[in-house]
Length: 280
Image (cartoon, rainbow, N blue to C red; front, side, top):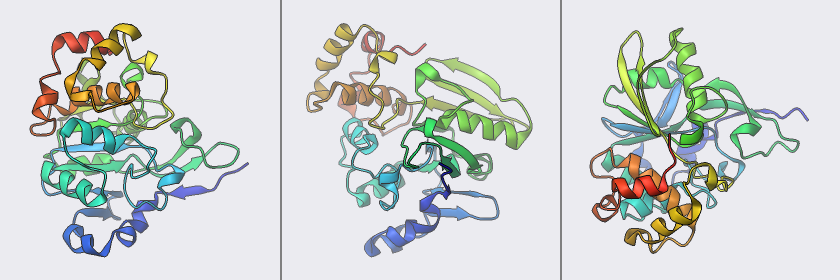
């Protein structure tokens, strides 16, 4: 079946779906720069960017990134920050306060599954990239990009994932290979030439529900599970998968000031990371 080419829904519907009470407050935070070809929710002087791929079908009418009930993104961020980020108003105020922008790498995509409703990145073909290269040039305060698909064990700047499509887009936009400045566990620092700006890329475990293969990321499952279950700050999190993702995200979001709750940061010891993470 030849699936239709889809334009990212939020380009045209974000303000329409936004409750009227929030429109005035965040009217200037939704950026859709038609001339330069990029879009996203951008608070004033952002210091970081959360970058996904493309909305899954459940999100087509939700009006915001990861607003689907089946996606763990906002539950994970709620857990690690100690803030209830489930209501849309709380999401927007938290992103604004913490100066974190959010967007997707694809502005147009075509699904390849038989019924044109695939949720995985592998079910997507990139048709048009969101111009993140120009976005980063226009917001020079952004130093960190958090990629929500691909994961540390498949850390790559090619292929079907947020990091993969970002790498392809940046190489296409600059006509150059990306210079890797440093490469440590799930973080990669690249230099955008010719501007020579350096960006820290953090490869997060996907918050999508289809990622059930924690064995790709965990060390010995019994030891890792025991360590996770002994982390006091995660006692309220029932799912082992969610505990692991919360811990992994906390490791990298802790690189920003004031994001991760103090009690969670205390659990990010080298011993715990060595026992849990398999990020080489």
